[in-house]
Length: 521
Image 1 (tube, helix red, strand yellow):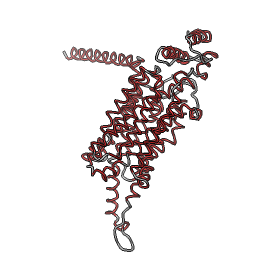
Image 2: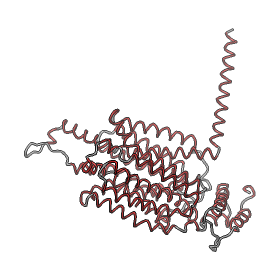
Image 3: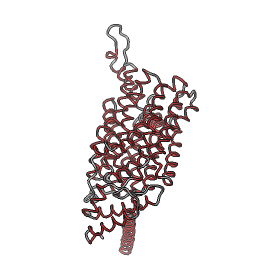
Image 4: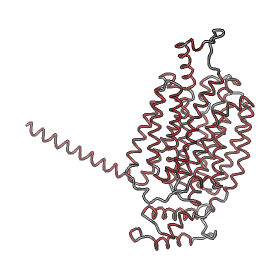
């Protein structure tokens, strides 16, 4: 009897193991499906961008109060060090010096990210997108853990700087990976728009998220929650992308060096627009709280929720731009210019607000305008690389990241100085005028969609032959993309002589078949 029960148990266990193995094989097959894998990659990248921006902003309600508490503890523990020798009165660090320390701490992330981005962009172009993304997530996980257990200014500064290093890898490789996986312009705009929505959500929801958990659960809890999510995202990246076993880069063309991309006038115009449009947000974040306290007598909950309503118009701006770009792709430059005008007008309106309800509207206008600019111009960067350089996107999105970092590195340090010397009104008027004056520069991009494909990739594949399966596939994607452009709006590729015609794709296909090895045809 016992033997029969054992036999039955063994058979049942074998059946269950067989079912589990079948489910695992089905899951593996589903993951390998190209469309499904693209969606999973988009999820991984969006979570990474969400985490980076939440960690960037979650410290806003936590660190100033925490550092003040550390200073009070140090004063009680070593009262002699805080006594003035001449009159015996208590001496504390001045508010101005404390504000400088906070500003430097906040800016250290963007400063380090700005310094290493040219190197990470080149590194990504050489090794691919998956390994740098995993490196970035690992560094961000370590940074978040250090934040959770840091108990002095030096350790907090190190954690903040380390986050900048992780962001330089994760943000750039993530955005570049989306551009590489979504080759059709409409899908690319939609995918990048989703990524921008996660960036916005992370930046705007992080202050109330951090403030509430800090108030009721202590400093460590919000950072530990983010660390757990970061760890899970890293494991998903390791499982799905298999970065250390991928051979996708073996025959991938070498990307254009970042210094050559920087001097491309079209890319330079886009980079300048990304910097200029983000300056109002970067400069207002460290200064608007004090201004609200002085002019509106705002409560702490109002200050904490200042930017949260702006999330909804930002998502609306992303949605509208994606829809318009699908119908009128040749007007991407106009959407960006319109966004900069909206940002400029909204920024000039901020100082006139007298209540919290009034202030919400111009802040929503700023975020709506930023959504228009980012959603229109980030896909434009990938398209410029496609038609003027080599379709490898690490360096060009490193330039985009540099553009953001310039604004956010200057904001916490320079904005307070401008407000102190010139005033809050002058700061906002200056930012508004700068955006309005820069908007006409985007006219330079009005004929971008009429550009011919780049010689550096298309002609090498046609004239010299593909060096592997990767090149053949990318060439086929290129031809399909060209056919798509010729049927959408006014975006029609030109041939080598600058004339329009359908013979270009046919000619390329004929020459490609002549040069490819038989196994690739």
